[in-house]
Image (cartoon, rainbow, N blue to C red; front, side):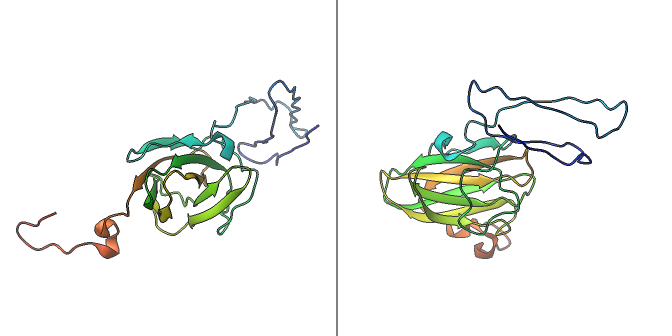
Length: 193
């Protein structure tokens, strides 16, 4: 039996429960003594990659779009500076070579996403690196030393509940001019890029 409630004055109240396939859930909706109140009840599953065990496999060198709609908090807490909102989605990548591996997450809405990388397994994840929320607007980038054949799990939080974003994993470090503070100066006339 699961008992959960939400504030009646919330604009779009929601209750999140972990359910098992085939389990019957009963939902009671009350209007807090307000006559004539009506509304809809929507039951939706979370995304397939809502927890580590369902992590979406990522190809190397390809931007992959994602949406964090209906995501829930994972079964364990954040390792590096817990974000305000802990709903998250998971990805995984198998390193092809030993050396730098770069994870980049972009968000057109400039949400303050929090990104963490783990190795090992979902049952016993080992923290590798993070880019805490607020580190760089629009993009979170992590570069870490990977081992060929090792599987890495990438956790991305959702501060806006239903936010679009995209993720890229590439081998090798980001180019030196990848960040504004390291940009190569330009001069009038032709510039080699």
